[in-house]
Image 1 (tube, one colour):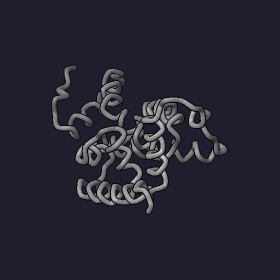
Image 2 (image 1 turned 90 degrees about the horizontal axis):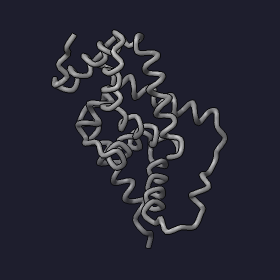
Image 3 (image 1 turned 135 degrees about the horizontal axis):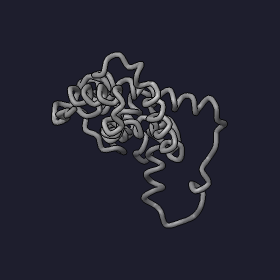
Image 4 (image 1 turned 120 degrees about the vertical axis):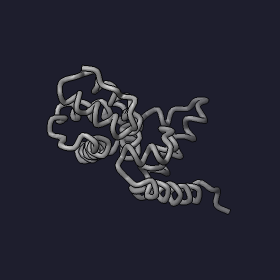
Length: 176
């Protein structure tokens, strides 16, 4: 069976999902490649950097296990985003607050510390802005890519990015 995955994104996703549901592990691997940055960004919007990578793997394992329950193959991105959000919320419920030791260790890693400070400010924003900003600023997805992958309209993503960036800028600007 030969599938043409050079289709438009929703059609390609639907074809990949159908193939993966039929047991094609390579098709699921392609879905992983297409959605790994989105899942990582969603997780990073909700959990510490140190937890995001492990949770990312858990999200894809869960998705593979539950793939048969996905009724509409074209809804894969939104379905996967929901699994990622639930994984992040479950992590919050099960864990006590912790602080990564490397955040307090001295060292010449100023750019990393600045990035962690910006990420901490993003975590303080309303949830609607948090995910869109993390997907854009950290994972490098464009507005249309975010919309297509998480199931939002391009206008919603544009508004979330605009308002979120405005709030983030206000929080990061030095106070007089």
